[in-house]
Length: 513
Image (tube, rainbow, N blue to C red; front, side, top):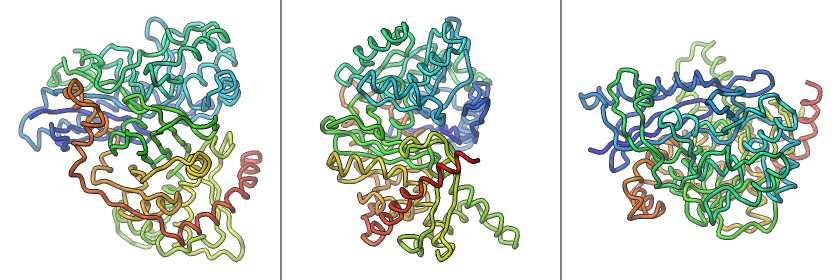
């Protein structure tokens, strides 16, 4: 039996998944973690990264031994994925120069704006090159020592293999990619060097596409994952990828006219394009698939965090009255109640911004709930409101693709926590975006499963394209398709008109509080 390991470091959870040659899950393990706001930046410590991937792997290895009666000593391939973007800088000796700045930070507006103008290409605030240029503009003292930049996935891959490489999908969130060359855009790199004096090509990871070998697990890397010494080194690794790329793989949406939407702590859609967009949109990011095809990405920083906070509050109230329930039962009950809500939620309004939301033009955020005196404040309307709010910013960006660029999509593949309660988030998303949404039986496996698939593809890359390989994997998978509901679509449109008019309330909250 072949075994392939995938590890993904998400915003709130690190998950490890082991699959067989048929891509069925053999064992899994997870570790919960949270980002911290320190000195004005959202961050995770690299000490936590090293400790927490070890814990997730230990839980997977324990489950494997319990199920199969033997220790997990050998693996045939593995890969690492993580949340994209951000800023991880190191000196020539590999010393980290400043705390990790994650995708969630919206402190690079000046740099992102100037680079967008310089390149004629949209550079979002969360991209690594925006962070790099901002520290240059800020004259931070560590700048002169920078020898290497990478992403979180690239960092963990470096720990495991010693290789400074990155999958093209993850690399496309560091610096613009030339899809024909499957490498950083040389012309833009030249402009950046003329502007800053820094040869950005020399400090970024080497770019690899899906199927290329990205190194092997070193003895030090094996001991990092498994201090017991049971796991043997020498395992081949696929290129490290970002969570957007592994989401595309996990939903088999890597071909032109396909797309997927990931909804959890953040929400983003990935639409593989048939042709270039007609112009630059500051609401749309241009990235790539793990195979290098151009992708239009709509990203919203906030999705379910505020919704989760309200669910926890309602659960606390229920527990106070003696109710006994599990967390999944609480979510299922409250999500299902949303279906009874009025399509336009009776004038209720919510903004779920824990941080800035560039799609809506906000540099900072405040979670906010507003209602009119005559709004019907029912539980059903309240829950529907917060599900609406979770995807409102995403819908703004999707409107540019669908309505202005006339991008054709037969359906969107959904995955992430927003879709865990069967039929509810999926139906709402379909109606809100007015596009059919499909959820596969494998959607809950997520990005860790997606990077494990990419690891398994290493053995097939010489004979099949990634698209051909995934088509074979997904040929017999169950899929549930939700069509837009006309009443809900119209109700969401009314909500969005109110949402746009009320953005001044959110801006005032940011200014005053």
